Structures are given as C-alpha cells and as structure tokens.
Amino acid sequence: MIFWISAAGLLVLALVMLLPPMLRRVQETGEDQRRQQNIQIAREQKQQLDAQLAAGEIDQAAYDSAYRDLQTALALELDGGDEHARQARGRWMVYFVLLFVPVTSVLLYLHYGEHRVALDPQLALATPQSAPAPQMSLDEMQAAIRVRLQQNPEDAEGWFMLGRVFMAKQQFDDAVTAYQRSYDLIGEEPGVMFALADALAMRNNGSLAGEPERLVLRGLELSPNFPNGLWLAGMAAEQRQDFKAAHAYWTRLLPMIQDNPRSALEVRNLIRTLEEREPELATASAAAVDGERQLSLSVDITPDLRARAEPDTAVFVYARAQQGPPMPLAVKRLTLAELPVSLTLGDEDAMMPAMKLSGFDQVVVGARVSLSGNPVAQDGDFYTEIEAIDSTQPPAQLELVIDRVR
Image 1 (cartoon, helix red, strand yellow):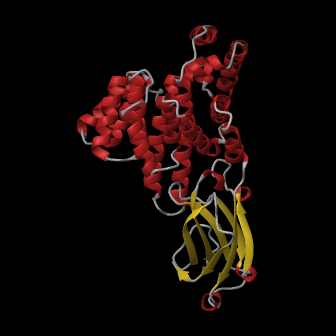
Image 2 (tube, one colour):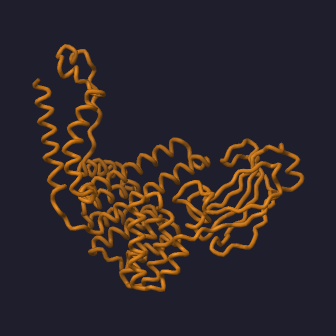
C-alpha cells in the first residue's frame, strides 16, 4: 500500500511539473523553426550514414560512432525545444496528459517493472539491481563534454557538441566560441559553418547580415544542397529584402523536407508570403515546387562485356546528386537480357520521398551490371556514368553504354 501511495505521489508531482508550462501562453519565436530544421538535418545525416554504410564507404564501427554522436547532438536540441513543442499542441494536450500519464505509467510498470520486488522485501534481496542510467541534463552534458575536452583540447567534434549545448541553453556567446573553435580545428566543413553562422545570428538578435551570411554562402558553395544552409540563406536573403533569392533558396529546400510535414508547411508558408509580396514569383514557385523532372535514357552494353554475364543478371540504372548524399535520387532495375532499352528516370523512381531528382540541379547518371545482384556496387561490376547533367534542362536523350569494369 505504501508503494502505491508513493507512486501516486510521484505521478502527481510529474503532472505538477508538466502542466504549468502547457497552460502558460508564451510568444512564439524563430527558435522553434531553427530546432525543427535541425531535426530535419539530423534525419538527412542519418540517411547519409545509412547510404555510406550500405555503399561500403564506412565500416560498422565508424557508423555506430557517428550515429551515437548524431543522437547526442539531436537530443541536445530537443532538450531545449520541448517547451515550444508542448505549447504548439494546444490546450487539448492538457487533458490528454492528465489521463495518459497516470494510466500509461501504471500499465507500463505492471508489464515491465519489478513491482513484486517493491512489495516483497525477500525478493528484493534476491534480485540483482541494474537500473538504467538516467538521462543527462544539459548541465550534466556540458560537464561531461568539458571533461572530454580537457583530455583532448583539439577535439573538433567535442567543441561542436559543446556549441550545441550552449545553443540549447540560449547562451549564444558561448556557442559562438565553441563553434568557432570547432571551425578553426576542422576547417571548412559545411555543417560546422552553418552552425557557427546560426549562433552568430542568434547572438545578434537573429540578424544574418555580414559574417553569418558569408559563412552560409561559402558553405553552400561546398555543399549546395545542405538543408540547413538553404534555410539560413533564405532567411538572410529575406532579411535584406532580396525576395527573389529567398524564394529560390526555399523552393530548392522544399523537396528535401517533404517527409517532415511540419517543416514543409513552414517553408510553404514562407514561400507563400514572398509570393504575396512579389506576385511574379508565383509562376516560378509552381514550376519549382510542383514540377517533376525526368531524364530520357538509352542504355546498352558492349558485346564483350555482355558475353561475360548471364542474361538474367541485374542491371541498375540510376541518377544521383553530383554533390550531396551518395544514395540514388532515382533508380530502376532491369536485366541484361532487356538491353538495349530506352526508359525514363523521374521523381516517381525516387527511393525516398525527401530525395527526389527535382531537388537537385546537377546529377550523375549511370548504369551498372551487378554480377552479384547486390544494389551496392561491387568490384568486378560493369558500369558507365555521365557526370554534370543539368536536371532542369537535360538533353533530349542521354546515351549510356556500359563499357567499364569496376
């Protein structure tokens, strides 16, 4: 009985902590947009890691390490953003929490918890205690990262993570210092450059004028389709009232975030606002946002390579970004017996909704005979590629002749 009274008390305490922030009305700021965009960036980075692992560019250990760091960085952002997210759900969430938290807590504990241990002291003595480590607060994360940096002051990743903590705590001066240190150590890495630009802007009341915009534009030269860079570049252009440039950046960004409905809606609203100011942008927006792109291809193979494979061997025809993630933007699977063939690659052939041909202007088009049947390229595969194809104005037909051995 004492156990359940204590548990009920703890549930009441949890509700007391949860409900007041939900009942207060706090003015919305651009901070929520920045955090939502960082969530999308984390998704894109996870997709890139998956593709690199599948392509054999990194091993499992490197993947696991990078994924853990990515989870940590995203957790830091979400720690600082929960209050805004709760406010956005509306007052109906108050009633949901009042019912959901107590009921779910009890059901989960009865199913997974060792309630018998709490009720039976003899069983408690016989049961090994192995409680999971509690989730770290921002202050604890900051302390842990500082210990890491004391051991290795040249750890660029550690400085970057510390900058994330300071951004979550809205300590923008300290965030600038940490990101600048990471930038000095790692050099022109777009992700670090965009984070530093964001921190500089937040320190200057959200203004991207000057050094922040310079960093953003340089980062986009290195990685033209980095979502956070396009977001910040659009914000910078809008702030200096270059609505056409802002429109261009955000229409490029929109296809990349279609799997995040909230972020996509925000970008559409920003584009719509620009079009209300500059009506002539509306026509361009319709083509850029809704228009699908297609590439017309003819695919064949040299006679000597055809003779070295069975007719049912898999053939993959694909298009990928010239600069950006290595995963295909569009792909079709054929067999060697079907060559020669004429076909089209377009947005309907995308592997992922957020990674379409229409989201990238410069692409590489190729065809590969997979002797193993594996979609990931292997040594011994036959292939050909054509680089620097403008997907906005492609040739009437691209001729691919498979004539090389990987």
